[in-house]
Length: 301
View (cartoon, rainbow, N blue to C red):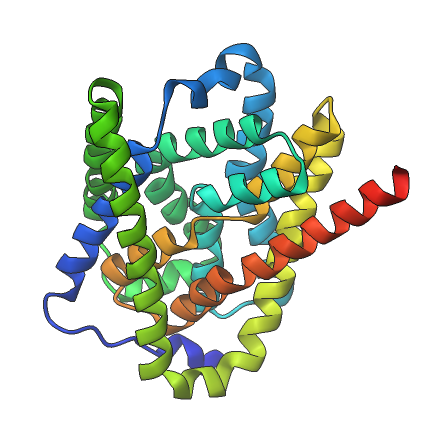
């Protein structure tokens, strides 16, 4: 397992620039979809939004760090887990919340908060939580990552499209709606392409490490769902909002994390395997949670 830290996903010249542009386009697509009503819960129930945001932005990385220490994870695997935990929530969580009968408005508000804060929070959080685990800290030092440039570049790449998208949505809503559809499709296509190409060109890594990576992702993702559920039941005042928090913590924008990894961290193989596998598995975890909620609803009906 230790050999996984030596695996590098080879990138063609110019690929990192393309990935940076892709990252900006992905963030622009998210921002174009933000509407004033998505901030409603922030105005009407700010405490509930704060509780949910802290569970996702502090609780999930803490849980992840605990996993890493307990299982003494290799540095690159730990980095992949940390990057996933530091990513904002994705729109998929809103869809799954709606299908499960949860509080969709609350889910959308939490996704909005994490997305708006992502340009500043995500790069800082990745470096902060990575620095706490010595092997990951050493790995980042070994690739000569310039922390200041990483923070500046990633923040700007995410922040400028966020501001542009929000302003467009505010003053040109019809244009924003049309662009949002196409950019969302583009983002999904790019992530799908990255995963497919990555799997096809690195199939030997899947064979070699898949049996180890998959259980780690399953345990990590399952614990994330349980964290969201437990925090929701404990901290929130209604079960439908708790249901929304379950999906908000269990579903992360791993596509964003994959692009950040490949564009900024020299394609570290262990981390790429973790993030790519998470991007597939969290759908399985999400629909399993929906099945459990539906079963619970039928049982109590």
